[in-house]
Length: 122
Image (cartoon, rainbow, N blue to C red; front, side):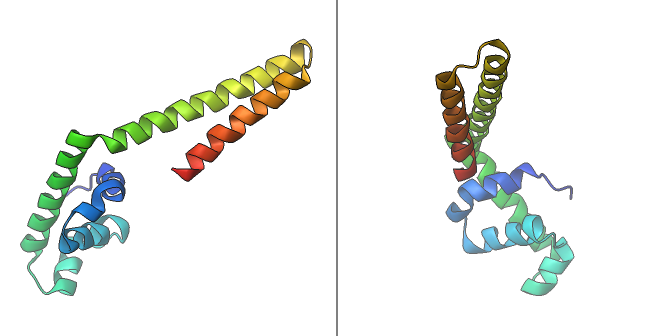
């Protein structure tokens, strides 16, 4: 079974909405990198039982994302904030080359700091 690493992102957004066992199995599989056999042995069930539980949980996470799109919005916002930071850096560089306005430098620095803070808090 190939790991879909986007599931790890979805687990961060929607994991609390899964059953405890589904969440635990996904955490073992994606976060702790345990094999299906290792999880089965630790939980006292069959490898197939673990596989089925993981598949159902993955399906539930994808369904939640298709309805709510929280992870997609997060990724879009993150890209937007990174773009804002890049543009603020360009403004700062252009300002250094063309006249050095203190107000422009301060505004560019504030924009960058705010965008960086928002990225780190998400």
